[in-house]
Length: 116
Image (tube, rainbow, N blue to C red; front, side, top):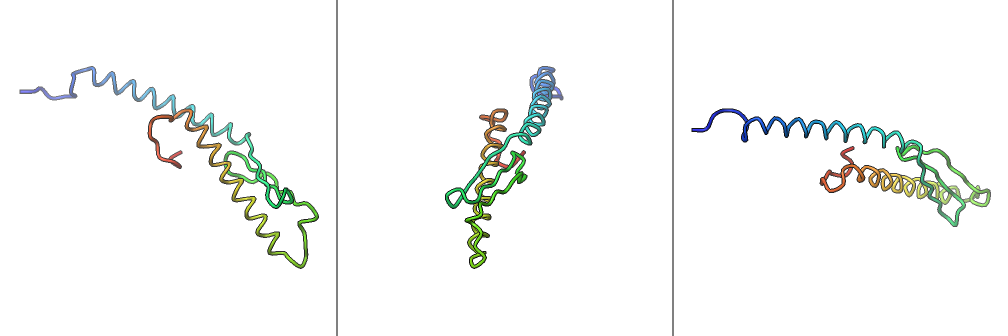
């Protein structure tokens, strides 16, 4: 008959302690990367550069630049479309950057996208 407790005796507790230490270290590294992502930026431009958007790694828009030739009072919809396209591209780039940075920590662990 098997005795109660964890399989492998006390070794199971040691493994659990190591796992908890690794998890804490990973959590600290992820917090640091999230802080760093606030400082890193990506830029997206559309329409031959007439509209550009800069976002940080936390997916916050930092700057939107619109060249005067993009402003046509008779075609406001075109300008709206350009801004929307530039913002969406900047958000995609920010996501890629964040996933790349987080992948340095979680690499090979099969963590689902967007978990952090």
